[in-house]
Length: 384
Image 1: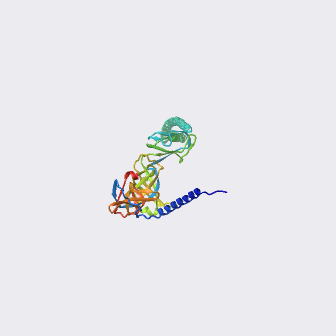
Image 2: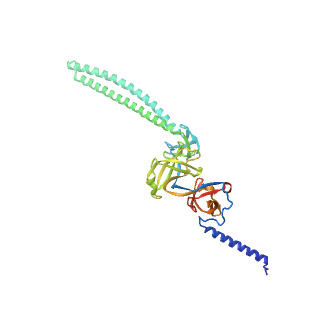
Image 3: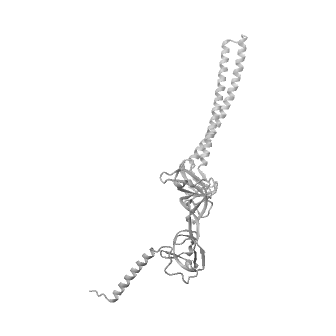
């Protein structure tokens, strides 16, 4: 049998009283109305700082979330189909205009270029032969023409027979056809050379595509390829940020899009670096996303150290204005969930319960407990 001693009973009674007291205090604290004075006054309290309660008109903002992106982003793609031999840069690498970025396999293109150059040599030799044939054909034509004219004169004076005239005419016509044929051969040879020149030109251009260089100064944002991959036209190899400036691409709900116009200056918050900066709206895409019912708004950001593409940002859009009561943040004393401030009342300092709202820099909004006509005081060391 367990014996209950007087000492144990006393401990249990004390514990029960403590629990009841905690519950009573908790319920009482939650039901304290802002604006009431504490049961104890601020007797003996002497502030080191005082300030009048301020009433100020502030703006309510809508925060349109978005992402920081480069204002000029360049996709590096291959112009030909070839295997990637080497990638000279990585994500984050700074590059200069003309710097070599990617090397593609050029062996097939080099072979095609060599064949085209060899074909041109053959075409040049063929053209020279056609030119010599044309010279010979023209000489033969002159001789045949002279003989034909001579026989025709003889025939007119009856010094030559019709058969001789016919024979001379036939030789003349054959020589004339030979000139035409030689001229066509020379033209074909010249066309062949022009064709090989085009093949050489195309092959040389394609060879140039095997060495991919930066089109401007910038930074590599993403690398999508590795040595051994197959590069294809339209398939990105790298993306470059080709200027230092960024912009915020934010999504604004349809009910507020009429408050945003190109050229308007708004505020942007970049929480990662705890920065608020001005931004100018560059573009409002005139089409709402049917899923989110939002419009894409693009706004330019100033060059700011420490911010990078892909960071999260908020575009602040003014919605309405209203008056609020503001006091210094350091003047608010907090005990648990209770908030109090010392106010000057009838020549003395007394503690009053308040309820606070948003923090605005070194000041804080008072939702209830003050009317805006009070003078408050605080001790720096006490509320630090």
